[in-house]
Length: 154
Image (cartoon, rainbow, N blue to C red; front, side):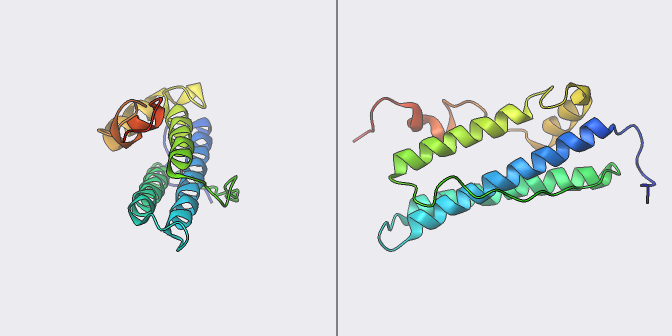
């Protein structure tokens, strides 16, 4: 059944949003895996676990925002299987947070105007301006800054 509210919403944009929803859910899943690792009794880094769990919730919230927007515009949400994170054991905090930084870069790259579909420039301008405002994009800001430092602070 066709949507009654769909107007000027290109199928390219619908596909791009579905791709972003699935990427955000994957990121949430990875953060949840990391959080569980650091919450184990033999690792016991509860503050790191809590931070990573908050990141998981944030990524899931992003996916839900994209889904609400898709529904509002008359698009259809197509969820795919979320692949398993590449690890179950995340090693030490620095290793895990470096992977988390890489994951954030992947998500941010997908959010750049023109990515992954150049026909959706208006969507990116509208949605990202209204919904992603104020979130750190730079690798040298926010909680990720120390991950790129050559040495670990004392």
